[in-house]
Length: 449
Image 1 (cartoon, rainbow, N blue to C red):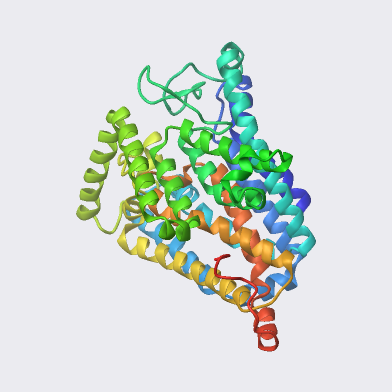
Image 2 (image 1 turned 135 degrees about the horizontal axis):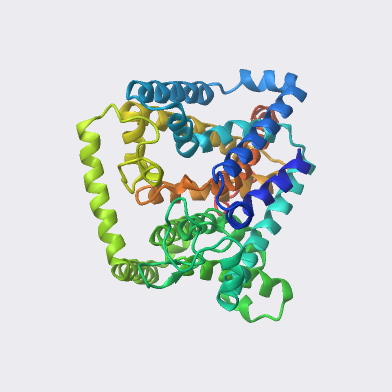
């Protein structure tokens, strides 16, 4: 399994470059939807093979914690039914599921894969993930620099001059804040906002990987190679977030950092207020800088609410948001409103129920590990998964402004990692519950929380 996951996730990270060079640069824009379909088919085929090879564990898995799976099936059937009643084509329904619910399907498959992982496999995967995240960040800066130095090379391999996103044409070499505006950095991703999602999603776990050598500001001045490297990684990642010029990424960053440093904020209230005011001023300043975009976002939200009121049963899958680049007509600029537009208010409630049931599993993992005295390796895996979980809270806020899962690069990279760890740790719930009766000592202190 691990031999497949590593090259697959590398392919996911390189996906935008691969599609641009091969499909736009070599094949001349022919069938640009095929790479995405091929990638999803590869994942489904891999999962099917894993299931066939592990029928007995699959049977056991299907008998446990069935509620999220059952609710998700009901949600998909409901969404498909509503879409058919609204006269949607099967292609629209399929693509609507892909953009709106794919991350939940990845949850189901990755959780089972994680249950099959051994401790050695899990630690190996985490080590790979750490270096993949760092390499992706460095590669993003190198690629951005090369675009400025030798833009003609990129124009010959499938890119378009400085511009904004337009469907069915080559991606621009750099995205701008507006016509002839400021270039926005996107790393090796397809869009600055998507790059911002990636940077925010894994920022907590990067801080975890680097935190052992970066706990006090004075360490910045200590001539220690490891400390300098870890500090540089954090600084470069924050710089990358700033260069995306994405307000949603800034907001997600603030929320994530606040959660991580909640105790410090309580202990230093005056300093925290100063930082909050400075960050708020930065977001407002960026909103003014991108005033045309800001005004468009506000108007889109107001208009889309009226669409929900007019038809609470929904308009069918693939009606709003990413669909506007194809044949959709409504751009809500809010993921919650998008769900209500596509699958109605009842569908939105069903989707919320799935998330709550998944959250319940996370709480069981947390409860089990808080009550159990286990070894340091399991504790580390648990904490990494917990720090990944911080992005979920940021995500709840980011969903108010943009469609975070428009890019499947984020779906696969984040949710495969997150739920493989969740699946692996879920195997300890009953085991640790029995152990806790013999050894009630908690290995997680309040500071670790």
